[in-house]
Image (cartoon, rainbow, N blue to C red):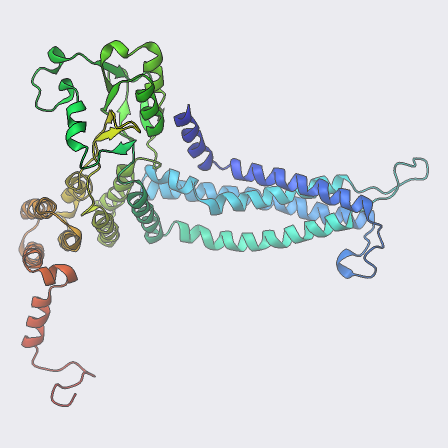
Amino acid sequence: MHALFLQYYERIGASYWFIPSIMAVGAAILAFVLIEIDLRVPPDAFGDNPFFFATQPDGARSILSAIGGSMIGVAGTVFSVTMATVVFASGSYGPRLLTNFMNDRGNQVTLGVFVATFVYSMLVLRSVRNGGSEDIYAAMFVPNIAIFGAIVLAIGSIGILIFFIHHVPSTIHISNVIAGIGKGLLRDIEYRFPINVGHPAEADDRANTLWQVPACFRPDTADDAAIAPYSELEANETGYIQVIDYETLMHAARDHDVIVRMNCRPGTFAHSGIVLFDVWPSERVTDKARGALLASVALGQTRSVSQDLLFLFDELVEIAARALSPGINDPFTAVTCLDWLAAALSGLAGRAAPDPLRIDDNRKLRVIGGALTFAGYLDHSFGHLRQYAATDMIAGEHFIDSLARIAPACGTPEELRGLRDQKEALLALSKTALAGASLETIEAAGRRFDQQLAHPRLRRTGIDRTATSRDMRTSDKPLKGSVSPTTG
């Protein structure tokens, strides 16, 4: 149930109706409160104050009608511009980026301000009365404080409109789009890697925890089903796994005294026949236990960025791949994507891989998880983009230079070996796609990469100091405006 709650919470955050609805309700409450205050304050309470000058009913209606009519018209225009922006972005940068623009709080708040001002003006307009001698309950009433509030909201709406005019073009600027994805990826790496499912097995308890792993779940077991049977929990719905509630999964495993091996992760497409969990021992897997374990997974029609770290990598790869397509041919957009991918992989490099053995408060093994290693994330990002970068000299050179910038963060020889493998694979593809000077440029980048990884000082700076020094020695003329070594 908690997984479904998290899923619905994310859907609400990506909707254009929730925040405007909340703001409209707030505007209605504000209107009733100010009208109630006006009922208790005499019209001449503020004296000659020009801001609260007593207005006649006809003038009050004119002000409120003008504000309400203009706000609903501007709200329609804002909605049209927003839809046009979303269509343009999804067509130019990829349909998977539609969620990013739907989540934009600037558009949601802008639409909400205009709707709220319209609702406020209509409710205040209803309270204005001309008065009449035949009905003692229909005395003239003009809510001057509430009208002043409508004017304030109208002025604020003008400011929001100016913000919206600036916000829309800046939102669809490709550099800002890539930066938004990249910053979100860095935040997810910082706070969600590794994901804490229960408690990791401490070093002292590692041997004891390994003994708790059933024989059927050991990787060196040849015929696990014959040793200790376990139950396979298949997906009961079809769609992408958007949320896995790890706390619910841990509690369900503890309550039913079972050990769960995860065969899925956020972003996996599940359908009938796909096994999400292996549960041991099988005799404890009752219908109640099965329902409790499957309740930790929420499926949807699309992938979600809430827990799916690979989805953010895929978005950057998709933008770069589109930019390098023959129809667009924009290598510098791909260069920007490579920069953010390098920053993300630098954040992942050197981090300890999450322990797949997760124990509960009683130090008992409950969940056997799994996570991609640095090599897996490297192959999923740079590896998927390699075939496109290999066909372009600018992108290919920056591809290798980006790998060199990741090297300072690598803490193990395996991570450095993964970078070398990506470099060698790109060079092999480039030799089949490029020739002449273009190929020589990428091969030169490969040699710089080897030099930087061989020399720790060059690796830390990420700059080819050897080439810089060689260029300075071969230059026979000082640069214009430079200081001579003999006179400086």
